Image 1: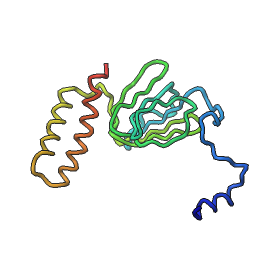
Image 2: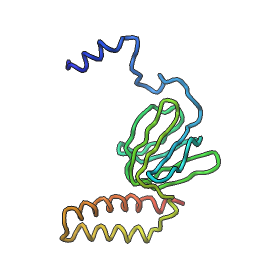
Image 3: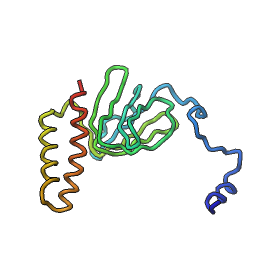
Amino acid sequence: MNFLTRATRVIRPARFAIRGYATDAPAASDKLVLNFVLPHQVLFKKTTVQQVNLASTSGDMGILANHVPSIEQLRPGILEVVTDQDTQKWFVSGGFAIVNPDSTLNINAVEAFPLEDFSAEAVKEGLDKANQILSSNVSEQEKAIAKIEQEVFEALQSVVGKSA
């Protein structure tokens, strides 16, 4: 047993158990409250939604009210916001999603664009250009940038046809 484990047992009395399951959480709300921000823009602020579907590095997930608190790193992919009125789809290049115990979801994304802003032809051209740079004789820095572009364009290409 390491020092930190022993110290937490001494500091934290036994009556304060660590919650580990969703069923242990008190019912906070039947609606999810979304805050979705970019460095330069607020897309949703304290907006009540039914569900948010997102692409995280640990897998695709759907977030509902009373979800287990967690922090997820976003990967390039679709972020879908489902409200009573409609469904909005955004392509997110990366960021973080934080699910709080009070049924709030905070999403901080690097970039996000409505999915309808993308055309299949433009995505294919971008992917072809990134692949061309990767197969050419360029610096490691240019290859690293092209690898990121390739990942984003591949994610876009996989969803741009499914947006309808």
